[in-house]
Amino acid sequence: MLGFVCFMCPGMFNALTGLGGGGQVDSRTSANANCTLYSTFAFFSFFAGTVNNMLGSRVTLILGTWGYSLYIAAFLAVNIHPGAGDFITTAGAILGVCASLLWTAQGSLMLAYPTEAQKGRFIGIFWAIFNLGAVVGSSVALGTNFHSTVLGNGTYIGFLILTLIGVCIPLLMADPKKMIRTDGTRVARVQHPSWKHEFYSLYVALKADPMILLLFPMFFASNWFYTWQFNDYNGALFNIRTRALNNLLYWSSQIFGSIAIGLVLDTPRLRRRVRAFSGWFILFCMVFAVHGWAYHYQKGYTRATATATMDMNDKGYAAYGWLMIFYGFLDAMWQTAAYWLMGAMSNDPSKLAVFTGFYKSLQSAGAAGIWRADAVKLPFMNIFASTWALTASGLLIALPMVYMRVKDYTEEEDQVL
Image (tube, rainbow, N blue to C red; front, side, top):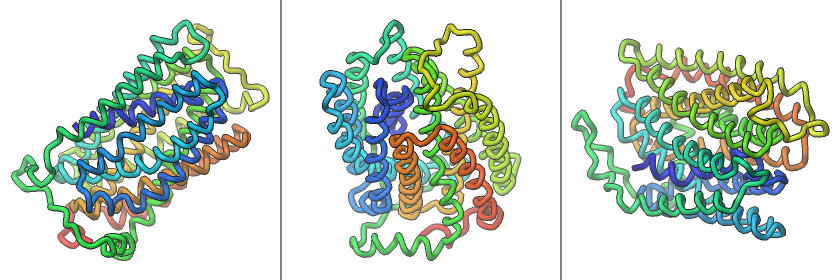
């Protein structure tokens, strides 16, 4: 059910964003909206773990979902009244607050429910369901706009209805305190101390577990690459129906990528440390293979020469489509591995809520910066180069943490703050 909350809400958001410019002809409005969205997301994510611990996961999820409906409604409004671009920017700022709550609650539950042997599998299953939402959304966009040059109102209305369903799903979820793991153990109960103590726990988490700092560049990079993929590649080169097809390919491949890396990270024949290094090595190879392939295309166009006219029937399109597939693989593997590494550091929900708050905050800070860079028309090559450099350096900086901090079993002192 947690997966389907994200299927309906962030899944539809991803389907819309993946179209490049939110399906609009002018991508600047979407880029500015994403900048404000991720700016508020970055700020409030540092404190969302506190809110989650105080209010409980179900209430936090409910508060987090409705912002997605507002955001999509804003795009519908602009499609009807083109001069209402400021509505999208305002909705983006509100969605940033809501998304910080939703993703922190989601991360805490997803990492707390499974046993240690199941964490990679649970993350993979969640990521598959979540991205299936973007697949469904992309399929709707492709079907309804196959003969169109602009995204129709019907697509936005369909997305809006699905997000409103997502708002209702947390009401049907079980109380986490009643959950029992498959090995018979109960999910650790989240304590609700004072607000002062909860804010202090952010500092304590860094002091007690400073190795988390080595994951910060990896966190920062985890949404950075979307800007080039969606606006500066998909949005810059392809017509609307081909953008919808690329979007469908991208999010479909995420399902397989998340499951594949989840199986590697949970392989029972290998010790957890070996699995951690195996996952890191796969990611490192993927970063250089995929970005090397993308560089071959990026060097052939600029903002001045790019024309969004390539069609799925054009000769040579298939290779461009395959690149979107492999970018989808990389994204799913990156996000799944980041969550798995946090899960390897603790099993305690309140500590994990703080960690996931750090993750989403830094992730969003990076996204805010690169979306703003795109809005002010920084050269495509500059954005691409920064993407490649940041993902590669993020993995290299994380390697000492994997070596020194990931153990074969989570020890007692790692359980609580």
